[in-house]
Image (cartoon, rainbow, N blue to C red; front, side, top):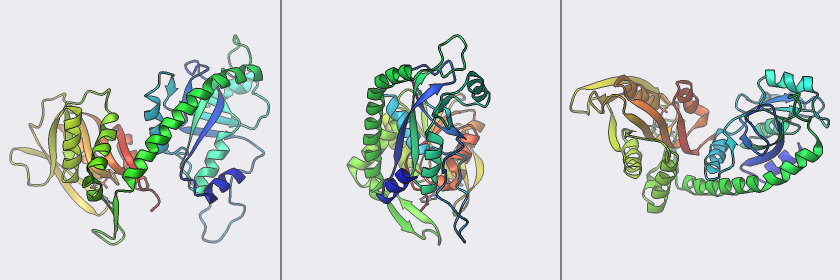
Length: 360
Ligand code: AMP
């Protein structure tokens, strides 16, 4: 608690933790890295909250469904693609009290519970960072197979230390690359202007015109977006009217793909199909030309911003209706408090965004 609260006081904006873990899965080998996405807290004797008492009008129950920052995880995963060591893109850690290692029976139980790796530190720290409102992610370094497998030697401290030493360089390289990516994003974020109470009271409008008019920033934003799709075949980018045309057009040029406009009602000249949707400040309808592309085309959806996800989901539905395959949805900005990313992911669509505005 002292560490997290000191970081908070210092104005720390992100926490990337490292942790040595035992692997509970054959496929997570000693030496592999895991970007954790869930935890099970099996500690018993720790102070795991900053809330010591019920205080009037203070929220007490921190949301913990997604305990690790999606955005930080995305950055770590993107940075890991530049290296040739194995990085697992998700994993559940069970944090035990320690200091002893697990018995074979415990280790097997944790596997049944769905845990992938085991350690003695991360769950409580992640929970505290969440309470403190600091985005938190953790890179787990697999050092051993814990003790679930009868025919491997049970874990010893010497074995853990040996693999841990080898892993240190990898983790340092990964974190350095991640920090430089975060810095690039921060400088893009600083170029976006926020206009409060537009177009309606209560809306914080994120205006990208102040990013677009800067050649270097515009170029870098499109490059960072396109990087995410380097290994993906994309036939067409579908841009959503109007700012999605700017992002999608530039992205299509860089990816070497064609462009398809998804427009508001009544703008497309030939035969169309339509979808209705709700957004943060109203309702709308989007259309696509019924013959926009041949069936089976691989299409990337692009827009400036995802809020509730209504617009992007309607765009995905249009593409599916004319038998296109949605390979992903790319945005400059996401507003995680409005749940759009989850909405798209629940519907089975992969999403990628460069910058988050949360809690504002
Ligand atoms: P949604 O359908 O709720 O995800 O809304 C996304 C669409 O509405 C995008 O095309 C955005 O350009 C626009 N939008 C929604 N909220 C905002 C906002 N706070 N600032 C800027 N644009 C927004």
